[in-house]
Amino acid sequence: METSNETPRDLSLLENIERDPQITQADLATQLGIAVGTVNWHLKRLISKGYIKVKRAERRKLLYIITPEGLAIRARLTVDYVEQQFNLYRRVREKVKGYTEQIKKDGFERVCLVGEGDVADICRLTCLEQGVSIVDETNLPRLEVRGLSVVLVVAEGK
Image 1 (cartoon, rainbow, N blue to C red):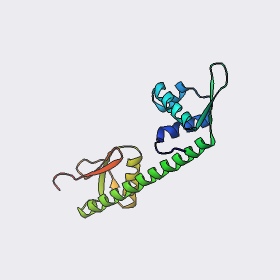
Image 2: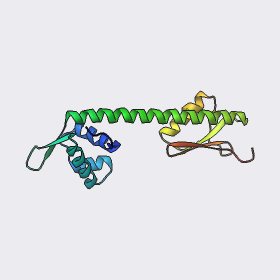
Image 3: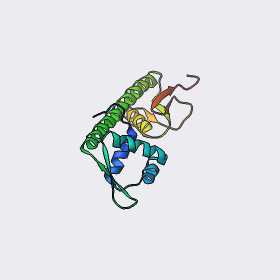
Image 4: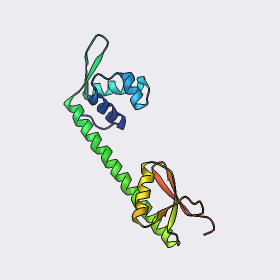
C-alpha cells in the first residue's frame, strides 16, 4: 500500500464518499470548494491506488465504494490530522504562555487580541489561564494571529 503522498484532500474525499457513495463529482467539488477536474484527478488517483472502486449504479450514476485499503488510509489520515492539530495547539499555547510571561514582566495585566478563529481561541484560553485579560485597547501589547502563528507586538512608548 503506497502511503507517501496522501493529502488532507484525500481524507475529505474519502469521508464524503463514505457518507454518500452515490455522491457526484460535481457535489464533491462544491463541498470541497475545488474544481470538478481536480476532484476527477484525485478520484482517479485513489482508484489507481486501490482505495476506491467504482460501479455503475444506474445508466449515468456511479457508485463509489471504499475498499478495505481505503478505510485503512482514511483512518491513518484521520489520526495524522488529529496529531497535527494537537501539535498546533501545543505550539500556540507554549508561544502564548511565553508572551504572557513577557507581558507580565513588562508590567501589563491586559492584552489586545487581533484575529479570529481557532488560533485566536487558543490565545484567549491561554491568556485566561495565565491571568492576562483580553481587552480592546490599542495602547496595550497586542497578540496578533497571523495564519497559524501568533506574534506579540509591544505597545509603543513602553
